[in-house]
Length: 118
Length: 116
View 1 (tube, rainbow over the protein chains, first blue to last red):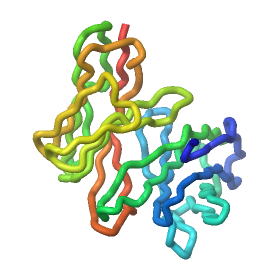
View 2: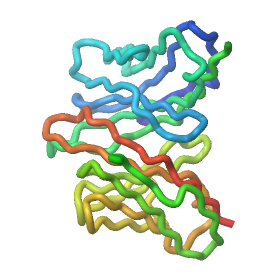
View 3: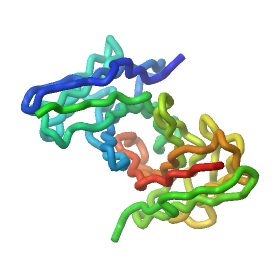
View 4: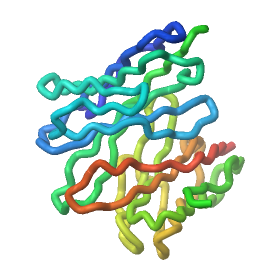
C-alpha cells in the first residue's frame, strides 16, 4: 500500500487566490513527521514546511500552512495569495520515527503540479 | 559556499558502461541519501547512509553501488548501466538529532543521466 498519496491531477489557481494541495498518508507509527517540498521547473527540491505528529498547532511558514487532520491521516498544504512563482511540482513526504532516536528516511508521494494563472 | 553539490549535472553514456555520480556536502550532516526521480513515480530512495562506512539499501537499490569513506562524500555508481536507469538522480543530506525528527533533507540540484 502507498504510504503517501497525492492523487490530484494538475491543479490550477488564479494569482492571489489560495489553493490547497492534498496529501494523505498511511502509517501505524504514533510518531512521524510530514514534510512538503517544492520543485520548480529548474529542478531543485526546496523544503517548505514540516509538521510533527504530536504538534498541537498546524504548522505555518509565511504563505504556507499545513492543514493537519491526524484522525483522517491527511496533511494538506495551503498556499495563500498565490504568486506566479508558485507554479511548480509539490511533493508530500513522511518520516516515520526511528526507534534509535535518530533521523530516518523520507517516503515521498508522486507529486502534484500546480500552475498559477495571471 | 556551504551546501550540497552534485556532479556532473548532465551525463550521457552507453549501456554496459560504469558511471559514478558524485555528491559532496559541506554541512557535516550525518545522513546522506540518493534518490531517483522518474515521471509518475516521484522520488524513490536508492541508498542511504547514516554515517561514514554505514550504508543501507532503499526502495530501488538493484544495479547501484554506494560508498561513504568520508562524511562529506557519498558517490553513487552504476556498475553496468542499463536504459532503465535513465533518470534524474538527487543526492540529499540531513542532520541527525536524537529525539528530533523534524530535520528536513536538503537536496542537491540533481544529475540528469541518459543511457543510450
